[in-house]
Length: 263
Ligand SMILES: CCCCCCCC(=O)SCCNC(=O)CCNC(=O)[C@H](O)C(C)(C)COP(=O)(O)OP(=O)(O)OC[C@H]1O[C@@H](n2cnc3c(N)ncnc32)[C@H](O)[C@@H]1OP(=O)(O)O
Image (cartoon, rainbow, N blue to C red; front, side, top):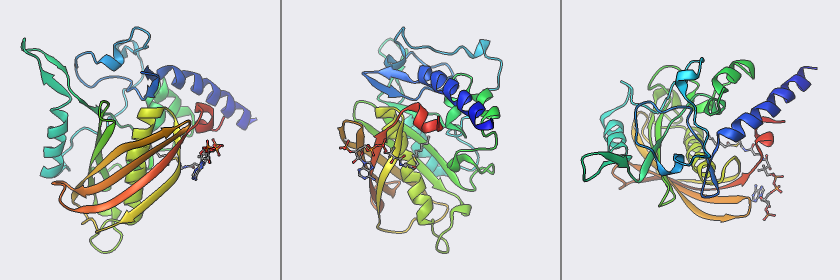
């Protein structure tokens, strides 16, 4: 009985989430429920077919965007955030603003919250579930990160500060935490490019340890797409790009929304 109720909710959710995924150039991208500030209209979201949500008419709480700066961020993290954020909006000749080549991806503690009504649904469906990387409340204790995508170059970058709860060897970041971040970054990038996907294969080479508490840069680039398969590669480097910490490749397989929510 409970299962059939869950399935009904999941089916409804599929319909809702399906509507909230943007279609751009035949690609599906995650859409935030709202912008955190006034931003210029972006070509990807300017289509009249896109259903935007007016939070003015939305009675439920706006989810917290974890990718915005907080006091735990060190100077490297802030500088890189400012660097990529400044390329999200550029000045026009007439003194206005327009979208730049990069876009910051918002980040919530449940993927469900990207959908219209997702904040409400997340209180009903597995209400205690949290996205692994956003499950620790203390700022700076575990995964602090922000992701930016560049549609033209089909690239994604992530500025990641590894907190003290991610220790593996003494004073160094746990390999599983690094794998988690790589999966998160290339998985998000694959979703951005290809719509709902799941990780089918992840290969990782750990080249040099990441000091606990430090900030590193993760990059993701599209290698190829073959039918339902999206192949990406990733590198984790020091913030100045001179030291290679980790390199990885991943295969993501497109799935239906039903597959994702277990309907
Ligand atoms: C917002 C935060 C984002 C975070 C992103 C995190 C993403 C995740 O961690 S997902 C969780 C971890 N992953 C999983 O649990 C996935 C478990 N696996 C599955 O569900 C399924 O095996 C799944 C969906 C990957 C593929 O199953 P299915 O849809 O039946 O596809 P299937 O027909 O088997 O394979 C499709 C193609 O992929 C290939 N393929 C599938 N698995 C693999 C694999 N491991 N290695 C190589 N190729 C593979 C198949 O050979 C096939 O290729 P082709 O089309 O050329 O014949």
